[in-house]
Image (tube, rainbow, N blue to C red; front, side, top):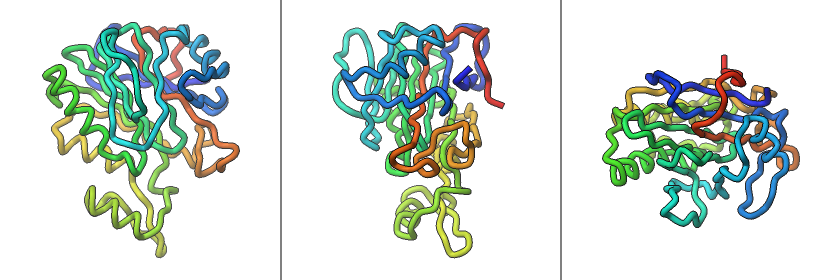
Length: 244
């Protein structure tokens, strides 16, 4: 199997959406609107997902989240998708940035977010959108924080580290051997905890360290693999390769 699947915390029963992430061996999942990607289509078919049901995004490193529904026209670029429609498969691509999946256990809404250093905090926009459109409380939600580049490898200049700490607190970056490293996983978890989200699964696997995952930092501009972080209601349980 060329994918990892993750279970939402504090959920039970078969009627729960499946969160998945393609491995590097599955190939590059680049998404451009109205441009075919046979590699991505083959990957989805391998999960018994009809590619025509897939909704993706051209990412802009923002905190914008779009709602996908039969009544709303899909338009624009953003870094997050939310839907109440169990017939669609939502997906974003990542290569060092963090995929974040979420599920409203009470109402059935679900979505996926792309969180790099510029988009850190996009989960708060998702919480606001869910409250406005569905009346969702943070305690109704389960989140999964997927693999991303970790503080072991995400070296940045002091200016970016200071900017990040000013926005998200002193623990958002670490100084080691006269160099600065961002801690995207801990920062995203802290944001959610502070907002009142109680059920969070954090996958502590660094994309730059793990060769089974795609990484812009490790592989370079010309060779990096974009992984597909998707969520849908129909991935077959008997074909799941779980993280661990």
